[in-house]
Length: 409
Image (cartoon, rainbow, N blue to C red; front, side):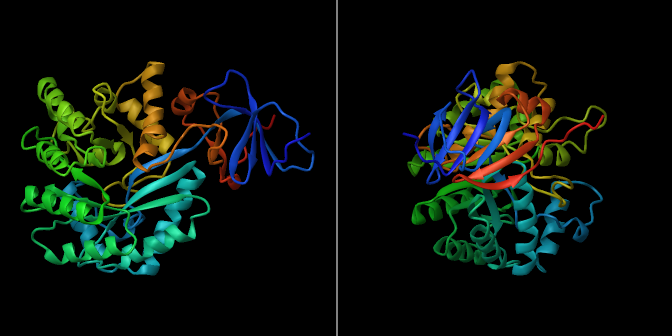
């Protein structure tokens, strides 16, 4: 007797199998894998021997301040300038404005194969809760095509701006999923870190820090982050982004920091586009890459991810929300060539990033039918070629189509 399916993806190549197979979907979950009979009336998608995975996971992006290049003046291309220019623009953000710009980026991400993302939302006296309320609406509006996690974030300091602390608490009481801090922009970095952890514990949420964003190997905040992580028993619940100081450290110092991060079970996200754009501008010649080698840290047992950070603003004046492009860019800058290394890069935008968002990436019977078809033959091939995302499915329902281009002879 034929099993009933709501949808079937035919002729798919998946990671765990040597030959192509069909994927049966019932009630939003994978119900069959292999070659099986199904009724002719069942809707199908022919993957045509292309690679199918569970899509990509964006672990660090700023939807609220995306697409504001027309409101910013970039003369120096520095971090301080980016913060200053964005700070001026933020004062005029409205809920409608943030919703529109964030929606544009979400749609970019979905069409590039992203299944879930973590967005930071700046919650301070300049925006109050306008950006936060807008991103909540975006999360609800696009829930059928992508999962969105909101991090209430103190970008411009905390100890010198007590109103920010109140706003963070309000956001956490009204739908924020986690809390984030930026100690290097605070007059008292250690106290900033303690206050963010206090909020995380009070609301029982995870914490994500922007950290050590310069090329001075000294005065890292990693030891303080690890200290507070262990004190609060928060191992496995903390992630940090940028941390470009690591790239400026010698091997001995970098290894010591890696051991600390491992001890705290702290995940690290590399932001290639922003890290490279903003760092090293005071060097000439031989401008440093200004980007951490995530593969090296992964070798120490640290969970590492790659993410977009900013799209079309003073921090990163370009972007298309393509994680496979970001991964390819990282692999180029890190000078990677071996298949095993490229495979690690693939996992930084899939399995590793999904872990931060409490998602699973295994294609198996009973798993959610969240799937993306890529114009590639394997995971490694996808990164090497910046594979086009051809189609997406969330809970077994189509979310986008990009028909494979054909040469006209």
